[in-house]
Amino acid sequence: MSTVHLPRRAVLLGLPAAGVATACRRGSADKAGSALTRDEERSLKTLRLIDADHPLFAMTLYGPYDPLRQTTALAPVSRPFACSLFLAGHGPRGPLFGRNFDWGPNPALLLTTKPPNAPASISLVDISYLGIDQGAAKRLLGDDELRRMMLKAVGIPFDGVNQHGLAVGMAAVDSAKAPKVPGGPVVGSARIQRLALDQARTVDEAVAVFRRYNVNFAEGEPPLHYLLADARGKAAAIEFVDGEMKVIPSTGGWHDMVNFVLSTADERERQADDRYRAIADRMRRTGGRLDPAGAMDLLSKVAQRHTRWSAVYELRHGDMSLALGRDYRRIHRVKLGS
Image 1 (tube, one colour):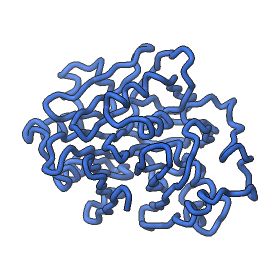
Image 2: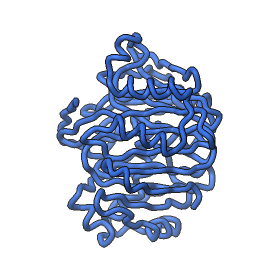
Image 3: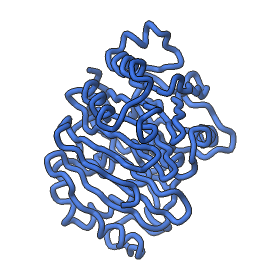
């Protein structure tokens, strides 16, 4: 198990710390007592706790939002990292996107977005990055200031899917240096996933979104790579190597990504990773034909002591199966649009 040590400091999940002063909503100051819009009030009324053992909240965000709005986040002091992601392209109900988020035991938010000018989506957010630790989570539903923080979660999805079946998830790697995009906006390492969910229907469109922005990994953040997948059964890993964006497409109806840089690893190096090998072996045996139960079983086989959640997204139907804290006997079922 690897551990990344991060200094306790304010970061913007990829934006320079100098830009911490932000406007939270429609230009209003982000402070207790500022007026909420009707959409924001409606959204906060949906905030609820759906699992107390592994704190998971849920909320539906209504109305427009600015996907480029800066979000101040806290980098944790020390967290083990190691995520596993895959596409199984030939499930009985269509392609499946599987993802283990292996991080600290932090509270999480299941966020549904329903903007008027972008696709609806569901995503998962580690809300410790908004300053909500285990202690604050116990007060969240009764504390107006903490509840308002949930309105910022839209900018930092850790994985998710939109109504067109475009899914995205991230995993830490040892290094990543993104290219400079002349004239392109600078965005954070989680925010680029929100932009993909809001702007893309397919993997090809999502790759184009990544090419339009300068993805910045702030000091103190782990470098990342990304897995994209769509309802047609196509997938691609996005990596940043020596200032160049690398796109590694799926082959054979499946894809597999963990915590090493795929574009520079040969087959021997890939097979040396236990989690990568376990996923690849299952995919080769099945030809990428997994149902949701089989996908969740595979996630359980590559889970680690610090797996925070395991999510299976059905890309043609908007259905999601979610296990928390390696409790695979209790599966939460979520449907986009419900």
